[in-house]
Amino acid sequence: MADSPLKITRESLRDGSMLAQVRARLEAQARELGWTLRSEAELDQSLQDLLAQQPGGQDIYVFGYGSLMWNPAFHHQGRHSALLHGWHRRYCFWVMLGRGTPETPGLMLALDRGGACRGIAYRIPAAQAKEELALLWRREMFGGAYHARWVDITIETGTVKAITFVINRLHPRYVARLEPAETAAVIARAGGELGTCRAYFDETVAQLRALGVRDSGLERIRAFLPASTPPL
Image 1: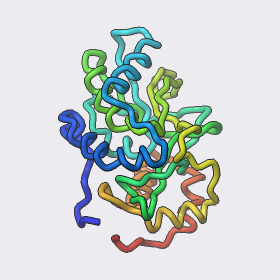
Image 2: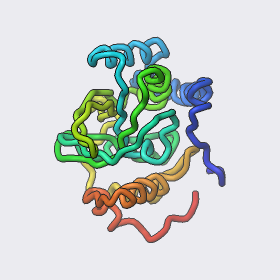
Image 3: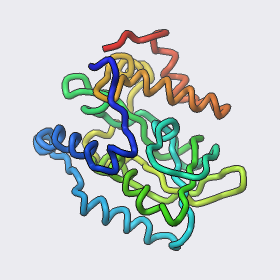
């Protein structure tokens, strides 16, 4: 892996270069494994369908629980500590690109059913919502591992509707169950063009601690991780 990993940016999402690179790398693999990669038209339709479920002309909140907490890569005008009930943060799907390879797959966080999750809510002004959410759709929705949905979250001013990304349990990369020690072993060794799984884990924990949050699931995994992981 390169010493300086790639970084997802608003610019690379806006000009399509990030998605084009990912598609080029994943298309053959997707065909072989039976995955479905969404086209640009399908991404646009998915976004339109979701926005149609709520009244238009309003600011939109996005709930982040993983890398969106430290690298949202979209414009916003508000950042709030937030609590979501009914879903919990879990390492529950395999990645073969970004923070893993086909030879050494990594694991990625998603929201799975049950429990609760603390994270960060971003407010996007209504006038910018469609443009900024289109960038987010290119980042999160092309591979089919996530479903986008409206949820109720609690921020300091009360309960608001927000968009977030939950795991698609029917996707072939979904992991129904892994013990903390097994998850830690993957996190300790896997990495790719965006960096290591360990760096992703450490950044997530750091962001939560800055919010005053201790995630019990992540802490159980951390107990099995070495103090530091050598670079790949």
